Amino acid sequence: MTKLLAFTSLAISLLVSSNAAFAVQQTVTLTVENMVCEACPYIVKKTLERVSGVGRVTVSLKDKTAVVIFDDAKTNVRALTDATKSAGFPSSPKG
Image (cartoon, rainbow, N blue to C red; front, side):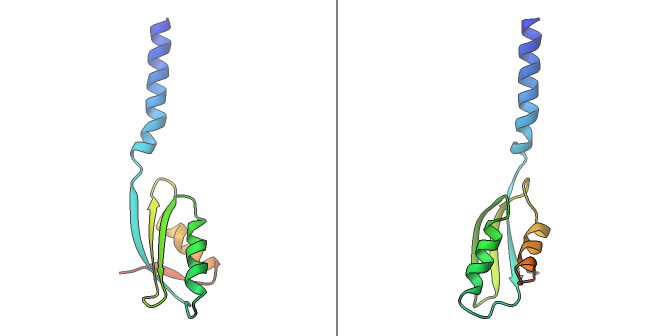
C-alpha cells in the first residue's frame, strides 16, 4: 500500500509540473499607436510589465514598437494588445 501511495504521489507531482515544462518564452514585436512624447514609452512599458507572464519589455518611441518577452503558459499576444489598448495605445503584432 505504501508503494502505491508513493507511486501515486509521484505521478501526480509529475503531471502538475508537466504544465510548466511545456511553457515556452515567446517574443513578439508590437507596433504601437499614439506614442508621441517621451513619456509614452514609459507608460507602454509599465502597462505591459503588469501583464502576468511578461518577462521583459523594450519600447522604442522612434520605431513605435514594443518588444515583449513573455511566458506563453501565462499570457498571450491578445492579452498584451488588450493591455496597451486599455492604456490608450492600440497595438498589433508587427507583420
